Length: 529
View 1 (cartoon, rainbow, N blue to C red):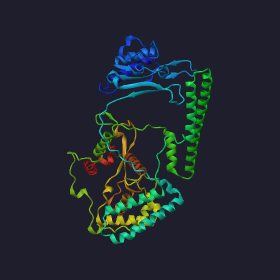
View 2: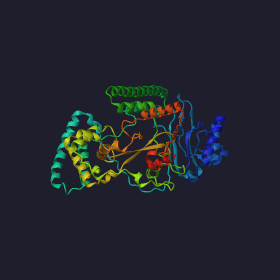
View 3: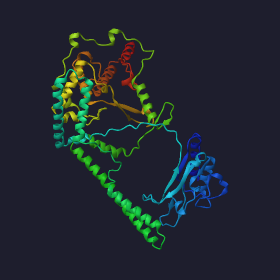
View 4: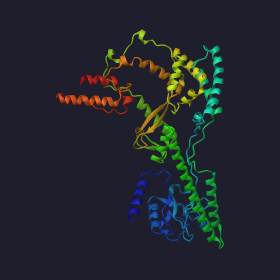
């Protein structure tokens, strides 16, 4: 009784916080038999299955009166079999203990409430259906058409790779001949769109699109047939009005037992197959699929989060509003404005300048582009264009040469396609409240061809890295790991302790350091120390 009092007290506190204009619906198995007593007033109707309320029913009705709600299952006239949400396994005890409550203000929006005996899922409870006619102010929204994803995973099949490569080579060889005559007239945007469109057309033709992932891959048509047999057995038992009713009940019990046993075996076999697949992936050194499977079994099911909190802490599930909150969050995070307290850095310390002769660099070669494509890691998510690096690796020399000519044209004209200025930002949850934007880390998915151009520029910058970056910098420098810096710091502390010298170390954990801090100002303050 104490737990029941605490539950209804907490429920009442929760309802007090809900605005009056909101539609409040409460439903569940309260184990409450609601009677027809006049003392409860408008909280109940005259169509309840029971005449007298039990203890749980009295508690539910007391809450209904205090929250100004009504039990909708007692309002509408139906046969008794359509008022029953629960029948005991022996078929003798029948109670109306599952209820749907709605606030009195919206009582007239309820059109009907009844039990649906045909909806069968192996439970001793029946589905309770409420028909609601609610007027909602809606705005017309254009539906965003989601483009079918191409199943590039099939490129791991050798026969399909050969077909894909031949088809791409034929298409791009033809485009290459056309470009010889229109090289000067064709702009970068047209050349980029030609590449993207051609690759997608060939991929859809040869590879095909990827279907939607099923929630339960083990629940196939055979499972549906078994469940349907159990449903028919239950309806046969419920609709029987002769002395054979007990026989049909026993048949339903046997059928339910067999279906449950069959589904459990089906699910167990699917789990064993997944574990066997993980073992095969480990043997074949397919780390990506191996860790994906093990992570699923380790973390278990995680419900998808659709809503998000705004700056005031209010949760919203509206798609447009959620996107606006994420947009504002990343704009504030990545577009940091300098504060008034930032000191000016002397002009001779702001940037490193190079002589004009040193500042020149050679144009990229086709061999350099091929080497970058070969060394890029596979299995990475593509950008907005949806074309992964596997296409360039498996497409052959013709498509690689087309990409090289595109990059060379960009190099000479010093401009990039407009789509390369866009990135798909994916928020990944780190820890804490999933409804809080600050508990996510954003990653940007960039177009693969843009990554090739970036790698070309990076390779040229790395040639000047040794002469421009001193030994004091460890971060983002090749072959200078964190372990080495920890060792150096321990040696400094040890020697200072040995020779009785003071050592001052400053550890600062900057929030969102990579995107927001002003590094030149850090140098200024360090000089002051």
